[in-house]
Length: 113
Length: 111
Image (cartoon, rainbow over the protein chains, first blue to last red):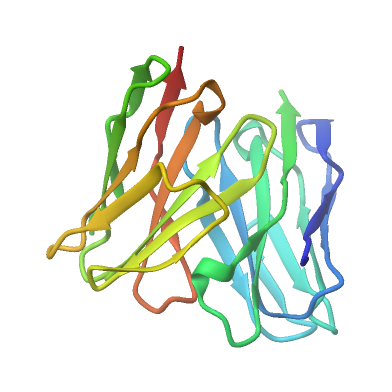
């Protein structure tokens, strides 16, 4: 059974602080996605990383895919209340389709004004 | 471009009843995926439809079923509702099969 683990499970920080959340697996993925989900809403795709070692920046968010394509991190600089939400990572295994995407349990982030 | 839409937003049923949830994919997307997100649990894959056919189903009982229409919209039916079926049901659509775009979900409450 392939599993994606995310840490920490919960994170509460003050506005302006920096944070990093992690996504880890023993499986190798062809690509990995990060989503943000707000309460009562569906997940919104933030980024897809494909190449081992790849780093992508989206404004204050920096995403990194591990060299071995088994793990990823999301770093947020100067967090804002609008960053509050559930951050999900999702990995697509080699030679499979989207129905085989494995979702992590998520990191619930709360940014306090 | 309109995103994935789902209806209804909320649905309240009692045990034993049937629920029907609907999803309209992004224009041009032929695949629709259904997920269940129960409180405290991650997204659990339910069903995948593509070009009108069921391509795969997750580890759920047969009372979870659905279909995809010629316009690629989809319906999820849950028969003989149980209390533990209470969850957010999410639909995602895809064109490439490598990336999904999610709708806002239907919150199903079973009393």
